[in-house]
Image: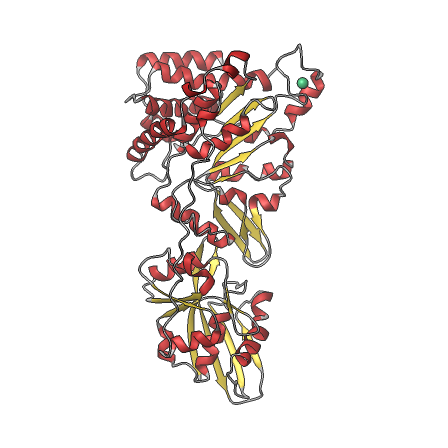
Length: 510
Ligand SMILES: [Zn+2]
């Protein structure tokens, strides 16, 4: 007897269709599994055999062969268990072959016959729906996640026994228990109105958020760098639907779908501690590779506080994502790509003691200063669009009346207006923000008038700009123009953009 079940292998945040064949024939009673299997998949044999027995089914004393194809795709993880079990049960006559034909199946099976949740359900269900499969059988605990995909019927199951009963039409799939938990109120969210003064810092945050520009904040401890980073989510533009789905796929593979926030369009902000390992940063692990922080920050913000304290090897890994918007991980089983297009926000002290450039207070020697700055990798700094110095507040700022501070709501309104302009401008392009304009398209998207061109020529000489630095000023100026409601880039926009660059000379070319 022969039967086949549809399932899928995860490849990055996409999937490859996989079929599980089961054949039961006369011969020596052996149980064989083939098809380029990782160790967890080979172990499925024991799990499935025991689970079937504990669910009340008796396997015939015959030769059993399970084949997972295509053979050139390596299969890892435990998500094939349920498909293996159902193929086998169908080949033994417990489930009609036809009833399995139009069903996609994924899930881990416990020894007691229970069906356990797995990572990556959402990409599997989305892609199954894309392949015109009608029904999808998933672990009950993955139901909320699976339901984020439209156009496919979800059959959630808690046990192998229930799975068989549902396929045979003896039982209806369980309904989701009504949940009353609503999205948590966000009233206590950090807000820019709580930061006194610091006008330049706030403006830099606004510009960065509007164009998804990478931002570096330099200043002594307690100057408000971390607070500003915490306020960023409150002014970031909302994700588009496509951006949300991309991120959900990543979260699903990482096993981090938060059902309360799954439908929220707020951009993610990840702030890994400086002790993070390269693997935690980029992703890794055995079996199905878990995406790292840089991918979970996709379409959002990666905030690195105390930037100089991170392991150089962890920072080095940021190069590819900053360049290409994705990370490629090479493993014995193949190479996997995860999207990781984030806005990098870094904060650091100006020097070891935190007082530079105030030479009256800074006790650091020249070589100490050099060593401190030397910890930063040049290729990463090259990718910073905006650099802002955060000074301690003076007394008048500190005691200034709070109510005069502009709140996040007003800032966000400008940011969203700027985002809309960009979405319209870049229709049909692969990028959505000014910061992502490739250099060959800059002239097309940021044309300059004669006066503006003359200013840039001056700046280019005065600031001794590199080509990259020159383009960065243009891109930042484009975002500032969008915020200011200017159709074209004007002198004021360019001058402001240049202010965010002149700083780095003070630190890196002393
Ligand atoms: Zn110092």
